[in-house]
Length: 137
Image 1 (cartoon, rainbow, N blue to C red):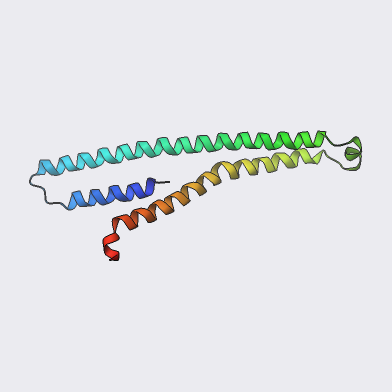
Image 2 (cartoon, helix red, strand yellow; image 1 turned 180 degrees about the vertical axis):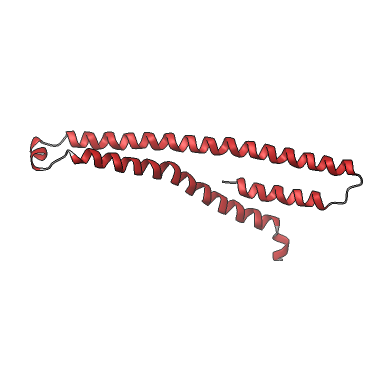
């Protein structure tokens, strides 16, 4: 979630380095090399963190979905025999499978994205206030 505020900070440093007056062409090329290395490290960190976030949230979603389906099945098995005579419970298996998949997708990808967007918003606001606090005076 803090990736975009971190990238804003790094872009600000890059623009400051590019606009700085360099004594020689070699200093300028060294500055470019440092920037490229910084962006490679940032990309690697983002790749690892986003992969870990997706993996952890998807595995938690699969676990929660299986728990929900197991609880539903246990509740269905606790019913009296008359329940199954009165109500046709054969279609409920399809219903819980479809709803379980929706639940898994919502908890896995959508909830992770929601956390990420909220953290990005607050991190961006904090960075913007910290970076430009003198302008508000």
